[in-house]
Amino acid sequence: MELFNLYAFNHKQRKEDFKELSEQLVPYMKGHPLALKVLGCFLFGKTVCEWESELRRLQRYPTDDIQVLISRFSLNKKRKDS
Image (cartoon, rainbow, N blue to C red; front, side, top):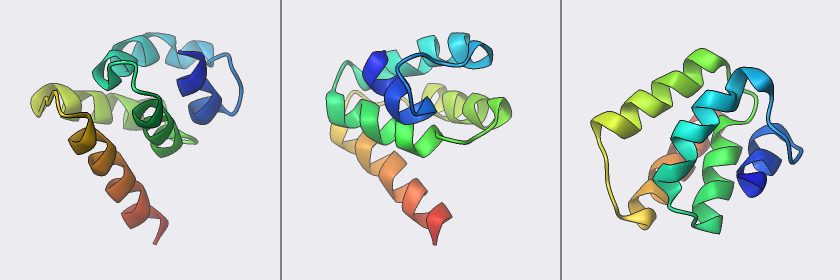
């Protein structure tokens, strides 16, 4: 959780508004450090509504393949940054 928080909030502790969402999102990354970093970077600066949207997407299209998850969030981040 600390690694995810470092990238999602730019410090080791999460914002209280995002506590429950963080606890629901992080398990999808199965403790994989790169996946936690990519997801955190992807969610950094986004609203609670945007986090909820990503959680619903993970629930709707689950996968056990960490590489797929990393690709999903890194590609979406690149598209939004362009």
